[in-house]
Length: 185
Image (cartoon, rainbow, N blue to C red; front, side, top):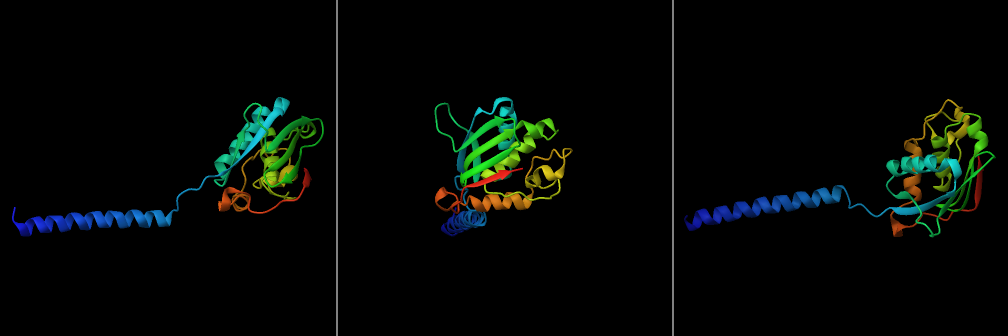
């Protein structure tokens, strides 16, 4: 191989390597590295017969948003969200964004409302969403106003975007302070 051919081969390899490096940098700039989600824990010790529905409602949110994830608390650890079962109407009370209590009320279940939709809806309040009433079945936060035939547990695009905004990556903490609020659906 002559010196000229070796130089051409070396230049070709450098151009290919440089092109690959620029392509990788462009791809990284186009899709920034994923930041860690805010992890909120929930305790189902007092959820009675609603434990599976709560896990399913949390999974709906985990599959729908990236900036926050809901996980069951480890035994003995303090949770961000307490889940309780009672005979009243489902409701949630926030103490701050991402913290509070959800009551899985048997009254709504006895009237025919879907338990997974109830769980996802009440967790939506803890994630900072208000009720949207009256509202269509396609809106998770329409709650009971969508009727007992509505079993949709999935947040719509606006609801997902609002939760993503509430839990931005800045400092891995909720985006804003949230006052004590009670939602009765």
